[in-house]
Length: 238
Image (cartoon, rainbow, N blue to C red; front, side, top):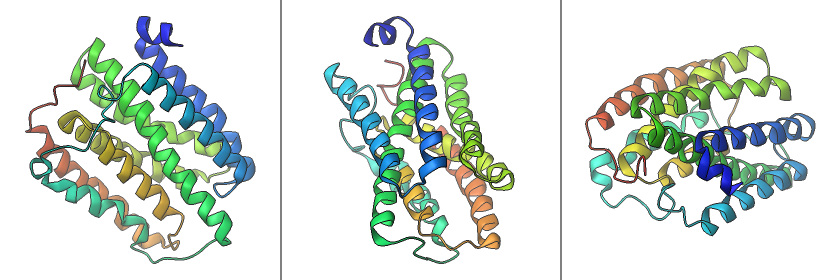
């Protein structure tokens, strides 16, 4: 695997995205977010990825070695933190027994870590290193959003998926721009995990769901335009 990483880094990233989707989709569709099989599958993927990164000393390259030092430049990530709470705007509800809810929360945290590492870390860094930075931003962001189409295979409705894809694309741009400018993946991992965790406690409110999507598009676009004016991190493309 490391030889593939050295010779064809983009292919390495794509391979991990495929592995993740192929493993996660049937687990989610068959057992659900609050299941032990899904948690076990995610834990295995997270451990393998972490070992790979640590074994080859890639923590700095993938922004895992520390929190951004000057968060004031990034407006303390406040726009991003506000948007992470959107799944709770329609109310909070407990959907499953405590054990299943706890399992789902842990699984969502692992998803935040895994998806940020393979999309923002592996894919974005590989493309930034081997081509146009602008194209790398677009592809890493759009691929992340479009990739949510696989949720159809796990039983998610077509309507929900149709709204989820553009929503996820906007978040893809937010996460990618934060990583590009700060050089740290940790804020992205935390925000991603919070979005998914809060989704496990959201009260299904159609109107507030539309409001959240609209707010994400508007605030997220404005925040990305602000971040665009900042200098890129030195670690990007290296």
